[in-house]
Image (cartoon, rainbow, N blue to C red):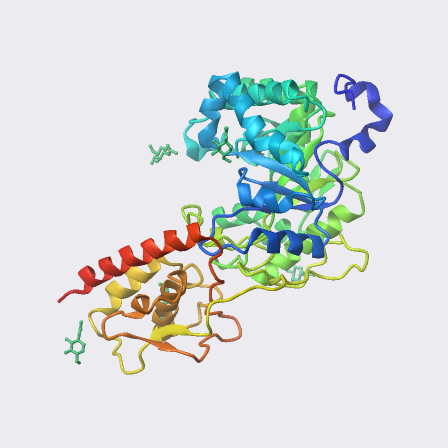
Amino acid sequence: MNEKMGWVSWGPRLVSLFAMVCTVRGIGANWGTQATHPLPSDTVVKLMKDNGIQKVKLFDTNYDTLRALGGSGIEVMVGIPNEMLASLAGSIEAAEKWVEKNVSSYMRSNVKISCVAVGNEPFLKTYNGSYLQTTYPALVNVYSALSNAGLGNQVKVTVPLNADVYESSTGLPSGGDFRTDILGLMLKIVEFLSEKGSPFTVNIYPFISLYSDANFPVEYAFFDGNSSHINDGGTVYSNMFDANHDTLVHALQKNGFGNLPIIVGEIGWPTDGDRNANSEYARRFNQGFMNHISGGKGTPMRPGSIDAYIFSLIDEDAKSIDPGNFERHWGIFTFDGLPKYTLILGTTNSGAPLVRATDVRYLQKKWCVMDPSAKLDDPQVAPSMSYACGLADCTSLGYGTTCGNLDARGNISYAFNSYFQKNNQLDEACKFPNLSTITKTDPSDETCRFEIMIQPQHAGTEQRFGWLSLASVLILILLTAP
Ligand SMILES: *[C@@H]1O[C@H](CO)[C@@H](O)[C@H](O)[C@H]1NC(C)=O
Ligand SMILES: *[C@@H]1O[C@H](CO)[C@@H](O)[C@H](O)[C@H]1NC(C)=O
Ligand SMILES: *[C@@H]1O[C@H](CO)[C@@H](O)[C@H](O)[C@H]1NC(C)=O
Ligand SMILES: *[C@@H]1O[C@H](CO)[C@@H](O)[C@H](O)[C@H]1NC(C)=O
Ligand SMILES: *[C@@H]1O[C@H](CO)[C@@H](O)[C@H](O)[C@H]1NC(C)=O
């Protein structure tokens, strides 16, 4: 497609063109890899294919991930981490090297790269403006580098942005405009995307609204029309997604870019780590969203099909929990590729719900728990527990979580086991002084899963965690020395 043929002049064919920007139709998935024990990339690619997922969004250009995607037919949006924006903004040569190494070479190996995401939510307020100067020049340089490599038509560029780049002065979608502190910058970006036939990518999170605002009307987050409605000059909104999306459409329209294609880069709901993060809500939200977009109805301001990537494919147990304990639980699949709930993506002919990953290789069936003879008032309990939780993952403990109903002993066992498993069941990782023991009886109950990790894949990973284990065992010995 000749990108100089503007969107506007193609008016009547706009809807069919939208589907050709960056992505094939249907729902895609975000595949992040911040996990201590990631599934092998080939297993994940097969999992996607088995579930009819035809497009994937990545946050970087990890070699093994892209190798596994080669020849799969799955369409790929690769990502450039924010930390790389400065160097790409600074020199076209750096951008050309990046494109050669991280796009062209993979395309020669049959990886279907269709889009490059330049940065990830770079204008989030929590970044204190760190990427305000570099994002736009990096976008321009990456585009030029793609162009120079002969990929200007084939591979689009975009910047995934958090929904807080726009706001509404009236609280209604029609009051939408870009944040005043970044208005000029946003217009430069939007104009560039428009000129190059590239899409605007936005991440929309009703869960975060609910999490950060106790007064947020819960029902408004969902799609079953069970919420009180908002009337925007005759246009009625009954869910936050539509209203938020259309706030963006109004912002674009107000600035003269009403036809710019929009991709929803991330949308989803976590299942643990907060009282509103559970499988029931996640299923209700994600299934509601699938049904909402499957009819091709779109939103009131943008009738037609919606391109979206669910967030996310698989849980990532090494993500920072600064945003909240839910951050490690966004997957529609658990870390080991089990569907968390019945979800029909509508991507397969059979219309079947999600199916699990195959041939997953686990560590042995053993767990580290609190020794039944150990006493709860042992002074070592508190430091041991906080040590284990600090290095492993206790985000499934606490009010309203999957393991929130454990008693004090169950809590301690959960923490010990998490630490033991993350250290690949090393004997030394279950030597909390006089407190822990290894068992072959699964301590899990109906809602709370005492995880067994999957086998580490690569020598590199094994070594890394081997050293981590050794280091932490040493610390443990020091910490608990009498
Ligand atoms: C390719 O991308 C990776 C990160 O995804 C980065 O570490 C590496 O420096 C890039 N290569 C070049 C030549 O820019
Ligand atoms: C942003 O500023 C706050 C307060 O000054 C600071 O705590 C935080 O670490 C900063 N974040 C970044 C990404 O620079
Ligand atoms: C709709 O909301 C009401 C009140 O919150 C609730 O009792 C009812 O179960 C909800 N219906 C559905 C289908 O969720
Ligand atoms: C279990 O641990 C969690 C998180 O540390 C805590 O909030 C909860 O109160 C504990 N429950 C019991 C019974 O000790
Ligand atoms: C473990 O228990 C034994 C016997 O009850 C005791 O002698 C020892 O000091 C305990 N060790 C620690 C580290 O508490």
